[in-house]
Length: 515
Image 1 (tube, one colour):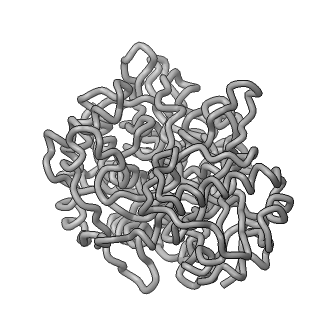
Image 2: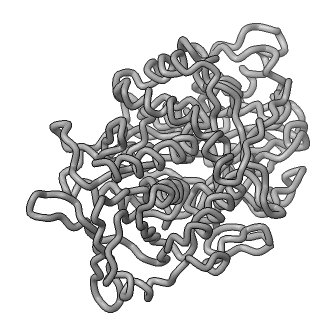
């Protein structure tokens, strides 16, 4: 296992461009440019693959162009969970509550209808789904941030209408979660002989005299190459977590991400805006808590394995009930600006804990992300030696290492301990069952950030995945799917982005071939 391109690579990271014969180098574009395709898909991840497979199943000629040197996108490094549906009408109602007016009902209905069909679609394409096992009590596995098996927001009506989470079983050794799903999709790309060109970054969408999108322009060392799309272009090129300008514009500041930089550069936002697309959900994100670590371009999600810890801001102040922070919603709490100074005093924040918590288990959550194969030590000792986690014999010494006020940090931890010792309700509402005194030296601390799993924003689309102008009319010949312009607003139910990749990829292809 080695470090490469800012991430940890294991023998199970099979992302080479030679695994399937339909993957082509960018030099192959010159010949392809002389052909005419029904559909050009921009982005070779999960949504793009599904769109291409659906279109080819319906008899269309399809080309996928991918900016990276390997396909799979963020689907391949995702957790791989697909949401099932227990009660379709109530599931729509639940999603409407979560959308808070920012997504039309017709879009939610189309998503749930498509999601009901996904298990059959996967089965028809040689795969299957298995229910992901849920632990009866995961309190000592992941107490911060918490991850709910059902909807992330069960307080809204209809939360139990969303069904269990399911996974595609591994098709090759070591290829679990999103990698297993990608392998299934890649097998179907091979079966259908769909060409997928690598290292091909689209710089512009071409239009005709009627403003219909009719192809893409790709920049190469030999100059721009135009690829015609007779029936339409489908944008499936992901989010913008690594576009600092867009992140600052819509979130207030750049944030770390679990994905690699080149996979989330905002290309789709700019391409769609250039031909008149409206944008939506631009300040929405699925956002956990994680580490920004030296030497690694992508971040790693954090977790606390025991209850002897607190989360503090840069003034050593707690600001929430830590054990109630939902896994995808850290951005709400951690990017709040100070009302007097305007500073982002919670970015980063710091987890403070003691020896018992340190020994309770790993301080990282590693089933997905670019660094999912990083071998985090069971007792966290390697990461302490690397300097990723600071260690000190006293809280005062720890405060100095973290750049925090000594008296303030000691006072904060003492107040927390006193609440637990006296069995008095914590002033943030943290349950006494989810507390333990932080009193076993040595003490530890680490900087943590809101860490992007998905940005949700991009070009606005309708229930048929047609990309829309500000006046609500569709841009002829242009469609979208996946993370780019997602249906999710600021409240994210969990297990929804990969589900949307599958549903919207199919919808976009069907729409392109019938419009």
